[in-house]
Length: 100
Image 1 (cartoon, rainbow, N blue to C red):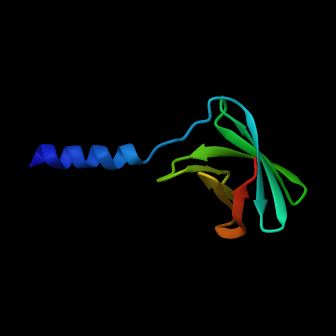
Image 2 (image 1 turned 90 degrees about the vertical axis):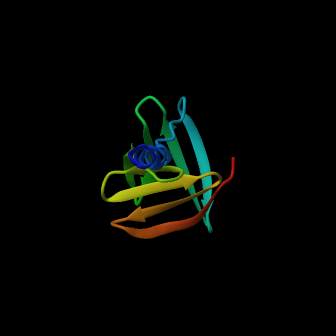
């Protein structure tokens, strides 16, 4: 029984992972009528983007699924072709679709 519990716990933790890009790349999203350009830095595990005239650099954080980056104020989350951006826990850009 103890082995089953340990194995189950290991599987749960394996599902919580980082998705690391191998190198730097620029991604273009369309969020409704607003374009969003995100620069991924695989070496530093960060994304950079321009929001409200401010250049943001968000560090990758643990995500149950997809890739998630945050600086505690802003959070950028992406999975597959989709993404969204939060400020202080509230979604400010949603329905973002990868265009490139």
